[in-house]
Length: 167
Image (tube, rainbow, N blue to C red; front, top):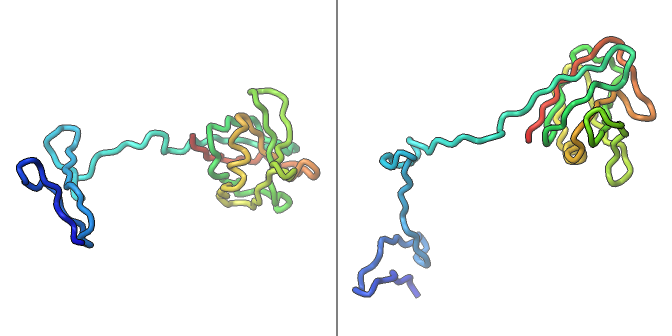
């Protein structure tokens, strides 16, 4: 049965349009800019400001002879690590220590299957950490380690990592 327009008490159809298949209808709508005068359309879009969309960038350093970085504040979800250009080939993984308080006791971070949270790395790369990010999101204070807890790798010189996060 074809679609029938809804009508008011005077048997007048409202401002509706039938869909292409003829089985439904929609009411065309005009949205105006905050000024109340200008229509929003393809050539005049609604101005939108996305809050919190810019990533937070923090620089951490692993000092010469050390395997752990200084403390970073997680600030939500970690997105990527910008690895130092001169990182030695001995560092192929980075793992993490975490603390629930700034300057607190740091512990190695493991996932719910008992595996240490690790990211494969190499010099002069930006490494996205999609899978590790979920595992690290609940830990507010982090340190980055060259190597693993079982086999840490000491930096041969001060090495810088830029950490990108959002939240």
